Length: 370
Length: 243
Picture: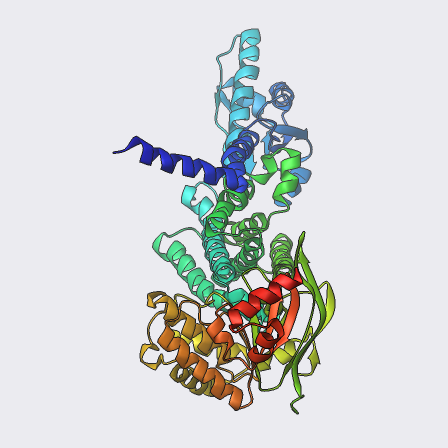
């Protein structure tokens, strides 16, 4: 081993970094961005899940509990009527609603606090804080009551009711749909950006530009080629997920395949579009942490969009994966069909992203040609 | 389509990339069926000039007319063949697949494309390697595949940017033989080079330097103009006087 020769290699690598500002920015900027996102997503400044509380208790405990819940640091509570709470839940504006029944205080005398908790059910991350908040409030409220009236501390025995899904679903069922969208989106994006970048770097794109081909021919041709492969992949992924992994599916399988295909259409055009901003395959690979990881964190796959800080929710709403994941969950967990407004909205937004990206991809070809 | 007497006509073409003036008011006329050589050192503007003939360069000033069509005009590109300096090919496809692909994008239908591809590969002497994947070929072979891709659709105008770089002398001679044959059949060929013995084979030459056309004529005319024996010296003399 020669120190001088090894040193020459080290020096050369540092020189290459100095010439490649992009990579330096990635190395030093991306961790800050990604860890910052993680901070906001896991609690720092996050929004609390919205929960409606309906107090029907004829005794004193209901009012005490409702007041205590309103101060919870886990959930954000509104007091309302039962009818209103039920419609909020089906409109997805709250994560859950809690009914404190008429006999709450009476049964607490015999040692059981039995509120009924109605959960939306498709996002486990929203269920947990509701039950935790309830448990904390019951403990506090009943301890005070118990001290005052000399009775024993009651046990919390909530009855749980799920609008969708429910206790029969496991973690895989909740994440299955979202992961179908993610896996297909990610793979198709990476393959297209590399393929298109190679077209640029090996000079064949220039050759195509010197032929009678029009830009739209190139973009449509790419879509055609990749969609054939993507269609096979979508069917494979969906069949494997549903029939080998037995992920719960409430809805139409054809709709799942359709949504998956729409996601690949977005991914192909995102790949063509972003390849414009990379000059080497190395730089293209860098788009994975920059364009994909934040999207995975912000699309609601793991962290529900509803609990993100407000400004981050705006960002989430600008990402195509958010709508794809939401659509797939609507179909697989809620059994939504094409008559469902929220699902149609998701499909429409994904289609709009696809169209916008096709236009953007075609436009970048125009710019790169001169 | 009738053949205009002028295959290419360039008038006052200018193009800058940032502070670099690649083309500084170039004008030239290439007659149908002739072999026109663009001579000049590296960075003289030859490649930029050739690229502007296939609409890859949006000029700052000046006009380009190709086969009677004023550019930009994508339609006329179906009759133009362009061979870039580096052999721009799909390395993961076979030789035949590459050639057929470029035939298809130049509007040849499938059957005609297959026949033309076979002819083009015959022309560059690669028929025996037609099933080889391009990545496995030597540099000179890739150069020949690239040439086959440029002429597969039997263009009326063929633009060759340093086509014989990396090609051994024997094959170079054969290729030039073929260029002459094609020219005899009516194909106009514009070829850039900085190899002087190739220049001798061109009908007319244009000396390009500093983005300008310094002198134009047959090799004999250029030698007489410079008052020297060898074309290489003529080139140096004429470049020097233009400074």
